[in-house]
Length: 392
Ligand code: SF4
Image 1: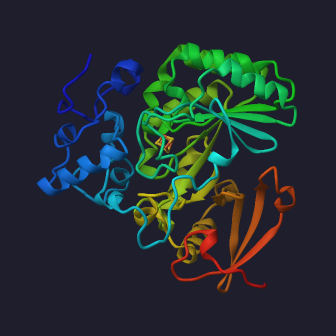
Image 2: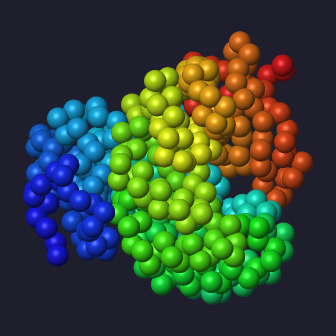
């Protein structure tokens, strides 16, 4: 039943007992509803209307309960509440694009992106429990698009025919917003493909909507699949305040089903761009049994880059300082540029030279894999393309 959003988002709510589908109906999706929680000036109200006309707002009550609504700079608020800065298409950090990770170039139709020889991704849905304000797929999440899978059975023919694949990633949007029988049907198609070593389901639901994982039927489906083929769940915690007892319980349920959960955070201005927060984030993840895996440099996405991207010169020092505080498991994460040409690890800097290593290359440029890259750091450069080439 839909609840008036102004009813308590109180800390005593038992999120674990809610029906996950019903509770989604209580998400905050309009400026009117938001005003029940956050005070807005008439000007802010009108700006927010403009923003959500382009990029919809969708905030679960659970996630809103983590926000300090009196603090406009609250890091968790930055991740879910639209900001007037989103009206800036590009801005101080430089040019932007709708497709920084080269999804369109590797689109095989029917929701399939085949960007590396060994990995294929399938966009399971464009819906997410929350629309994160920093999302790099902002041009499609929550919006009509032609990049979501229409027929998973047909998509599975592609995976079956491509023996070079070692893994398939079901992504989105958030695949865990699909009904459990649909997730089961997808996994059933992949179960008997001998060339796949493992399957991944990419999700932010453990962070923004852990309620989903208290559905016993879902856990059973995941556990059954994991008995046949390893299932990995990449998730996306960005701030220690997101690591709540409810999120920890959701993760525990996945771990009890034998599933490995890896974290892919994004490095974001005003959210986790300081040593203490990053250190707490990585330690907090380890405490709940999630492996720190990637920390992504924020991509040059339209309406995101200007207010979320941290210059690399500043960022590399923050990340290195945090690593110094972390034990071996804490510092296992890689600081990554997810670029149009592939995945590039930022190793560190020597003076003003940024040292990187390309981890994955596109199928048409296999020679680029494992190469070292050296670039000149400048004060404001936030992306590989902004960094002039230089000799070591
Ligand atoms: S859950 Fe993931 S795909 Fe959905 S809006 Fe957030 S970052 Fe984007």
